[in-house]
Image 1 (cartoon, each protein chain N blue to C red):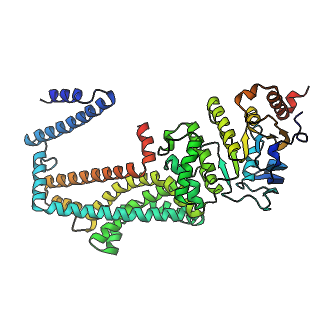
Image 2 (cartoon, chains in turn red, cyan):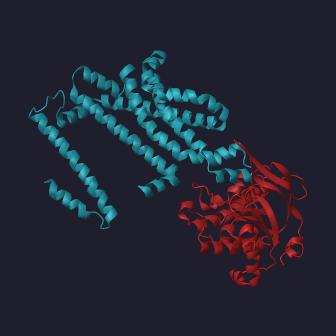
Length: 269
Length: 276
């Protein structure tokens, strides 16, 4: 089986970079309070690719943004490495569902934006931005403006931007959700290549189970109403993975298992 | 006479259709303008209307030439233009700076907003007489009136542009630990630029209105003052000549603003051009 206790792949030997201890989120509303996410306890190790998968309203984005420090947990803590504190701004890269490029900046200048905010050396940042644009196959688009790029190209630029300050952790909130299936597959493969090559720890939110299995070392399956972490599933498919892995029995089993977890009522015999 | 000319101009253009359309429309507009002038000239020469109401275009043209030849029109045109430009630039700078401060201090904005709404609801030209009492006859009063008149549309638009924030953009800056100043300077201000220009377009025309009103109520210079003088002597051609100068001035100011906008707010321009 794919139980978490059994598998302990090479990628899980790293140090703990994020320690999630009973982190929960409750929003105050007019009619009392609304629970977005029940307490979650888990940890993320260096170099791991983790997907948070589940239906709308399961709190996967809430959990991601709490990990990034963009949302404060109502209860519990999420600490970064051995600091005992939550992750500091600038120590991670964030990719949103929308590319969120600034329309008044060129693509190159957009990718170099983190350097402007973090006060990094401008010349070095520009060089690195050029290299990253080449990495995401956008060489030649440096001087274009975002509106001149397709949705897929804009999202590539957004990924390059998230990598500019060379963060160890990448948070991605349904980054390919708005793209067509073929562009999405291309970007899945590129994301795998980049995260492997640059040894990034990735937390990746998606509602696409196949995408989650294809990319991840571990999948956090969340369920809605109220949002909670149901189970953590190890994916032991060897790397690098190609799109053809989707036809393998192991892949199909993992997808079926997560689907069953997320739709318990329907699949009960 | 005119029919062959227009026929010749249309095919003369470029063969592709988007280019063909524009010169034709322009030619038609020109043709209508010429026709109106010709009709007015005929009507005046045959005394169909009294010259006191509608003087012959040739008389208006003569008044214009005389006025500029004597130097009076040029001096007063420059005086009007000077008040418009100085008042407008001052009003725009103060409006944008104030909008920046208010949008950064939500508490202050909430306190100040009722006053802005109250002043905005009042016809600003109505305080022109009061400003004359405060600052006396002359350029200072003119500039203060212009400033007051063009200030509000710019302030309101700037506030609007500075406030609207894309949630992803906001979280992107937050994730990088941006300071309030960085958030303002690198996100909110550039985002507000197209909005500010919408305010500036209204403001520059308001500025011209403000100048003329100021010259009506308390000044001895400017095109508005010339108009009052011409009116006093029933010199209708001169009144029309002044109106013509003001119209051309308004068009020039608008043209300059559009030119600046296409350069400064280029990323928003292209979208409107594509839609238009």
